[in-house]
Length: 151
Image (cartoon, rainbow, N blue to C red; front, top):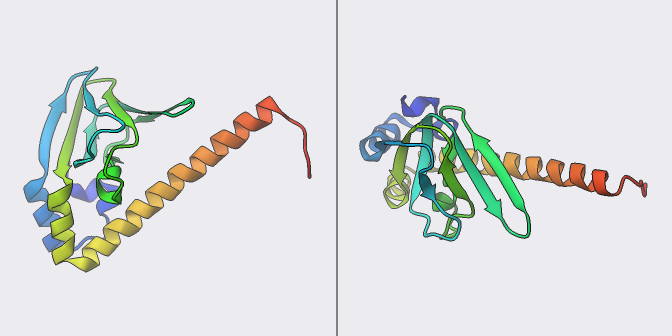
């Protein structure tokens, strides 16, 4: 898989893309492998090439999300400035992925701010999509618990 198929890297310049390819580490993991845990230092961004990964957030309830589409980015916290991962990612099948060190990725974008802006726009879009999905799930659950209408 090339970086071109990763949505989060769409719109980057050729130099930035080549620099990212140079630092990206291709890895394989077996089912049951934990890539990162919520609360751990967020050091890497991951791009799924093949397989399935379950991301889980546990804060007063359990929210789980399956990632199986090639090109999907995970570990956004490493680039969002939160310092730690907000979810736990566990392989639910054999997985092939790219692991990209966040510190090095930030340096690439510091040298190429136009590509950096394109990356962070995509990252914002992904975060907003996930937030809207979460709102939808929360509202759906609330309707099941209390179907009354107040409008």
